[in-house]
Amino acid sequence: MIIKKSLINKSIEYILLHIDEDISIEDVANHCNFSKYHFSRMFKEETGVSIYSFIKRIKMDQSAVSLKVEKNKTITDIGVNYG
Image (cartoon, rainbow, N blue to C red):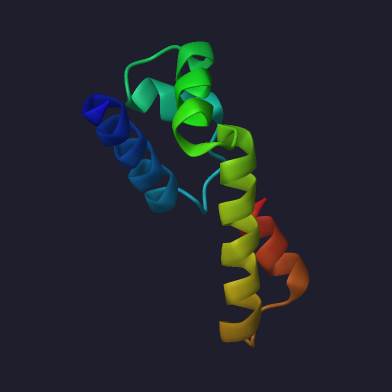
């Protein structure tokens, strides 16, 4: 159980560090040394949300922050940055 939580924390840290890149579930799973299928099941089991939904939510949240903070950027620019 503790190992799973540590793994999930490691994956979330990786996602946050690479959120402005075109990150995939496979990228995160590879970083944690698991197949994307096994990792996806573990992530959902521990967090209650799919890894795909989590990444999209973080990207949306970061986009919203950027819209408020980076007044000189257009919505299109921010959309391109976060996919």
